[in-house]
Amino acid sequence: MDTNSNENGSEKFKIIGDWNEQSKELKEKFSQLTDSDLKFEPGKENELIERVGNRLNKKADEVMNIIKKATNVKSNGLTS
Image (cartoon, rainbow, N blue to C red; front, side, top):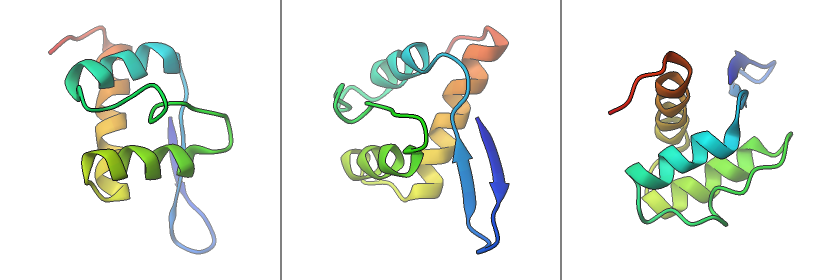
């Protein structure tokens, strides 16, 4: 996942790595998330963030942080 500021000052959010594994981790941590919530298509990160945010009642920046943490846990081989 990569975050960069674009010309509008908002964050560009990109998911990298194995999304299937990352989404499994998110579903384990947040049981209310569904497969539909976590469906990801490259280039449509904002739609994913919106769906997850709606389900968890979180703002976009909170959802990005949740996903970042899940990605970091997987990439570092750590478990919670």
